[in-house]
Amino acid sequence: MRTQVGIVGAGPAGLMLSHLLSREGIDSVIIEDQSRAYVESRIRAGVIESWAADLLVETGVGARMQREGLVHEGIAIALNGERRRIDFKRLTGRGIMVYGQHEVVKDMIKARLAAGGQIEFEITEASVHDFDGRAPKIRYKQGGEAREIACDFIAGCDGFHGICRPSIPNGVLTEFERILPLGWLGILSQSPPPAPELIYSYTDRGFALYSMRSPTVSRLYLQCAPDEDLANWPDDKIWKELKARLGPGGDKLLQEGKVLEKGVTAMRSFVVEPMQTGRLFLAGDAAHIVPPTGAKGMNLAIADVLFFSQALAEFYRSGKTALLEDYTQKCLERVWKAQRFSWWMTSMLHLNPDDGPSDRRRQWAELDYVTSSEAASKSLAENYVGLPIE
Ligand code: APR
Ligand code: PHB
Image 1: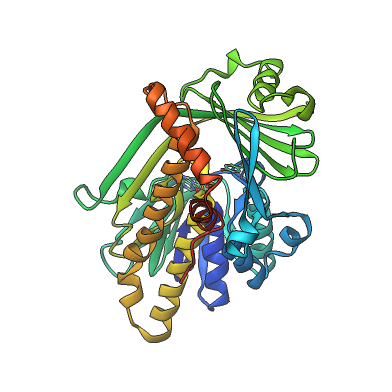
Image 2: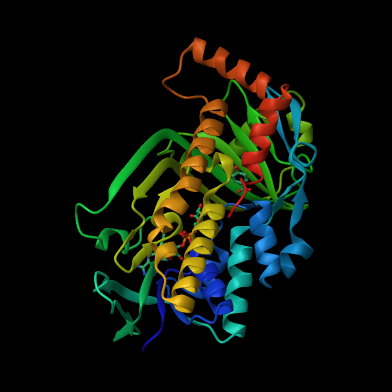
């Protein structure tokens, strides 16, 4: 089979790329090694920056998000239970959209298929070839049968553990990696969140985050070890700790519910430079991972594919390659700013096992400053709602 852009991975990056390209009249095919049901139910983050929410709406895939998503105009930072609000709307004029990543994935798969887009699920043995020339190829198996996609460009949207990045010859990429001694134990619960807005809670027991997917479904996280064994965390222990990290009165504020999902995420910062070689372009988690504290992962994936789709549109319109050549530079400017913000939020809010009493006092001073100074809270707010794009 032949297409213009062969896309590996049907996460937010691959799906949004295919969607944006179709609007430019550019043909693409997506291959995905998981099933449709699996990718549509995989629980991930749930905060969409305001420009990205606008982009989903403007390009026709935001209707359900507008109906069911929750627009938040601020967050709370709690210091040992004392909640202080950061008012995004007042500080930046904008808010954020709280809507699960898997809901975005569902909406985009539906839109792609309705528009005649091609997504091959449950493929195996994907491999990428000849991207140093003008005729790259993707090979894979579908139901045991060997297939090939001949294309002009390959988009590696296959996440951190995908095959595209490792297919790039040694010596081309420089990897920047920082593995943090921190993890999050996350649950999804059939119960209302403790407050209508997200609470980032700094406590002597460690960090906790109280987020949500809807007024009746909470997404709650506890700071834990990166290799924390879930077997040591029966539901009642999780609830007890979540209540304790909400501060005084936490047991009354937090309603328990049926635990729908439970998992541990280890934290890392990771970036490759460049994000492209020849006609293979990486986007999203395939090229970079941020610690989750700033909720930037999905937003960076969407920004990458917006830039890539613009570059491809220019190329197919005029034959010009300037934007394609600029792709890495354009993405990484944003990626490193998101790395900085996520690192800063993470280091300010977590109990770092290597820290001593002076570090704790400095963190306290920083949180006190960020929640009381107009300038400092504005800096947090403008990064959280999303830096300007374009
Ligand atoms: N062949 C085909 N598909 C693959 C392969 C492979 N060899 N390896 C991985 N995939 C698929 C995965 O199953 C997944 O559906 O690629 C997709 C990658 O999607 P994501 O991991 O969601 O990555 P991305 O689209 O870049 O979105 C980034 O996801 O992990 C979160 O926090 C992150 O929110 C961010 C977002
Ligand atoms: C989430 O709702 O899953 C979430 C929200 C904010 C974060 C991280 C995750 O910073």
